[in-house]
Length: 234
Ligand SMILES: O=C(CO)[C@@H](O)[C@@H](O)COP(=O)(O)O
Figure 1 (cartoon, rainbow, N blue to C red):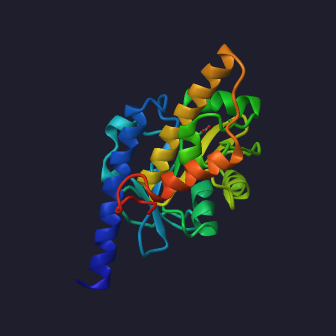
Figure 2: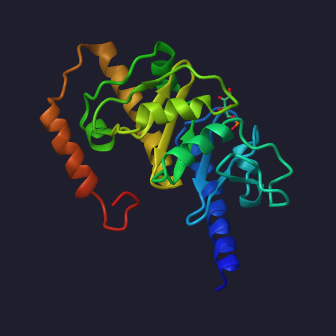
């Protein structure tokens, strides 16, 4: 296969994967109307694909996704290039530039995570599922304007060197990163689950902290032993 054909195949695979992952946001109840987006880095290229802005998830096909370079500039004459890319394109692009290990970025307006973001309160790590997945609390990021790279800078400042793959941007909502777009969607699903469980627990009584050494142990086991060898983060 020529280099050009290999790149075209990688773009096609990423388009198909990212289009299918938007359906997962709907399946897990993480989005209302069109308020969320998934992007995926094209492996081996300085490119990513992202949802067009304000397009219904039911209508979204692989060719509707917008192909961008790592500055967030739409690649002219590519499928989907006639549409405006997601409002969060510059934010996603900033993350891909700053964090080469990131293969996918997700944003949702999932209800409980947004409620924590509205209070500007991090989600404390009081359930083993959070220790497994996030290795500690889910942090709050700064308030940031929508449309430029401010959100991206907030994501990177908050998550660089942090175990969590989710950040709650203050007064806005969750942004998650992952080794792949699927991994970032998983983080968005788990973030909302943690936000809901901890919110409900705290309404019913005091939260019981998990000692740090227990959190560390749970995180190490889940990251290295849980699941299968081929999993995205192994
Ligand atoms: O939160 C916002 C805008 O307020 C966006 O992230 C969200 O509505 C999704 O926008 P896009 O449809 O991706 O442009």
